[in-house]
Image (cartoon, rainbow, N blue to C red; front, side, top):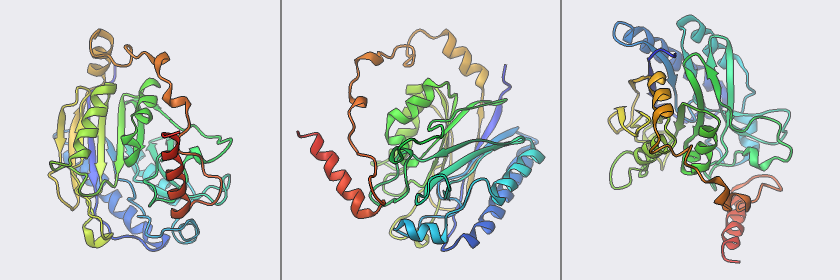
Length: 328
């Protein structure tokens, strides 16, 4: 039976990086936060899992694939992921990195928005954002690539429990989280750059509503780390933070006060209790109750995969074509 531990949702406030040479300073600060959190809370809480936001290493300050490839994209693994692995080994913790803009020679001409889960033994999973925030994000989705070879929905089986991750806009697509729940995910990590006004404040508190809903409808813990960047770092957007941990009944266990700036919140994770409840409950078990054979919409393609270089113009065209499919 997995022992209870604490998870930390960590938020950051960095200026937009213009080149990949700025990534090491961000890694330095996040490594400081990791060590400060694990060591500082040690007399009170056993912090074993830490999550950082989307675009922690480099916000996409450019709107073309060629510029992102030239100035910001990096291969994974890299010297930065090695630093996280070394720290994970030193502290005995697991780290969901903020996302990198990734280039992969297996898929030339594409930029992925990628996060990795690292533990004492190395990289345990690599996740590429399935639903970029289009039309503004020109990253590729695995959906855009024919004969894509990697696991699109990885679930890492660790000593802490079965851990999966999805990125920001992915969480507005219930199917994404549902797929991982059906694969056994017990802890769902959300790394996000979820900006105002869709944040943690009413009447547009999408951040809070979606995190709680995905937790209760899939009976998983949710550890959600959001950007806390000020507007001057990436105008016209500001990020409200509000990083949180939610239990499998949708209860908020801890949440940072809304507002920009670096913040860390910690909360308990009890996988043994989750597994007990999953086993004993006959009511409100939406996995066991699912009548999957009735649903047809997932077999109909809406947004077509990219058939050319991804750009804001081509994304807008694909979105308009997808809208027409609903009216045919």
